[in-house]
Length: 514
Image (cartoon, rainbow, N blue to C red; front, top):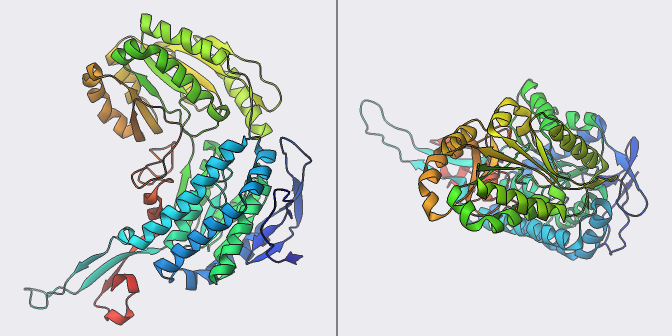
């Protein structure tokens, strides 16, 4: 069963519950029910190997033309997607709120980020710097051997699989950063929609289809396959046509997909953003001077969006003493006053409750706040350990996805440095510091550079600026590729490879290499 593209949706948008493959809306062999926070559940098609095969064949065909399209053609396509998403703004907000429980302001802000990064990539590829053009002129008279003419540019790698994220239904999902970067590079995209917000994924796919039609692009350039099974993800990452994968999600799911990519007869890159505790180091002079500000700021950052951010500051580190006592008292007050919030899925809520209980049950953990969790609700948790307990229980460094925070008291600067050296890879590390803390900060910085993709001073890591210099990634397990980012224009490099042209006639070269 197929249908064609619809007109712009109204705020009363009702999903078809179908996949978008090769420009057509298709039913699947099975179905699943959405789990909205309000309103009735809706039926959605479940995809599998057959849908992946169809989408991959279309993507491979589309790559022939899209991979050789001009930078301006791709830029106009990205801009058309942004415009089509904006035209559906009220409808996107309405269904996104029903499915996820996120407030309208958050969804509107995320929609702005989504269209902003599409337009950012449009400008980026028009400028052409990402091509990293290099040329070595021929040296025919060089002795003992002449040198050929060499030209190098970056070229798209082929069809890319993108997994929608649960916690960002727009900015990290159907038309989010991975999709924008891959399309900008010249790569067709197959999106596995996240079952937490399938209707939101569908309406954004509708906008992409409108842009495909308006720009006259091969419809195989984009597909949305819905589903809630592990088999669908496995079929996608193991398909021989898929050349790379972009993923944002849990460590367990990401590692399973990563292993499948590595086990292929022809392994492919898996760019997974898998989680982080984002430690915040409260340096002593800053804590003494700004303890109230830091405690309240940390509590607000920890609980923002029910703590469902990859950059949630789950651990704070402070030197033992009265200033640490004051921080605990103020943070406890702020977190106690923060009520439970709706989680994106029932599964996230249940996992948060288990994670929080796990921390509370470890010997040596002091519990300061343990708000009551209801169904699909997450209340703050605030715990404290000394350094000895932290070192004795490596599981304390596991991410708890939600508004749970842990203070680690260390004896002195040396113990703070020891803790920093023992950290696993992180998306972010933060230094709360005053001028008098410069010496300790200087000692910590080279350690933290080895641990994180982004290092902050005097802020909190929740919120990621979409910009040229941003890095959203880090050493494993923060991500599976420490040399990549999933946010900012540098993200395009994940979906490119260098090609060198030796002594080719100029008229045979790709236009960007001439």
